[in-house]
Image (tube, rainbow, N blue to C red):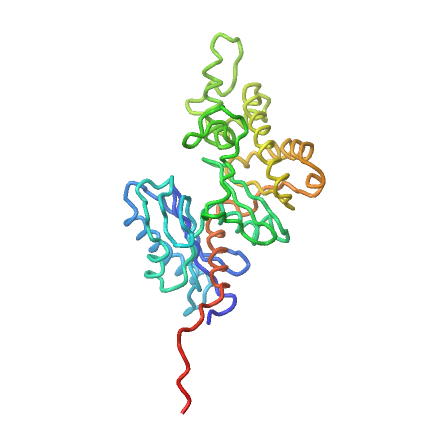
Length: 342
């Protein structure tokens, strides 16, 4: 029987970095470690490094006092981008990890650690982490969107994590906000991800700067060799006209998608995470106003829109939250039969 309150190990597999940590029952992370993914090494080498990093994290957490001298973690949670099959425990071809086709990560983790192992889509796990240990504590229905290199998300509905029929639900970046617009993932055009991701914001600003020639307009962004999303938000905050146009369009289209989610799911709370949200009130204030004015009552009156609280730890905490749920699953019935009476 698993001891109540024992910490778990969270493993987050990203396209650029691996992050691990020991997650306590209150969501506190100890022994946090991270290193570059180095995708060119291939999945066998990377998984080996991930597990080694996890073992180092456990020892670091023990040195920090989060684990007793002889205490071990109770389970392992793995967070990774999709597509994946969480039920089967297999990575079926994550878009950010070329060549990772049908990697049985749960079985590999079980063989490595000898513990229960759970797998979840990274954005879905992050949503659950925020729900249990971050901005969503105390809510019943919560929607989470991450605005980063891409756009993803997840939802908890009436206290239950929404996974979808195939386990990859929550692809909110694929919401259509401008049909026929900018190219998006696959054959989709005009999606939220094509406008509100950090990558898209930078691309749109770069294109706008390139189109300035002969117009008589100028922008501080013109002096940059490479424009980033944070450059656009900073220039918009300082009153740069071109940056403000790009930023206002971003907020308007994000508000359109969030309004749809509010009308459909009627959440208590919408949580926004990811690098784009570092813009703070420049994003949050106009977004709230736009959503609350457009959403249908009574949803508009009930919903709150807040920034995520877990920051760079969200992947590890989300993986930990999934591991805690794995521990809470009922044990399979015993296959032993009673000896016949004599």
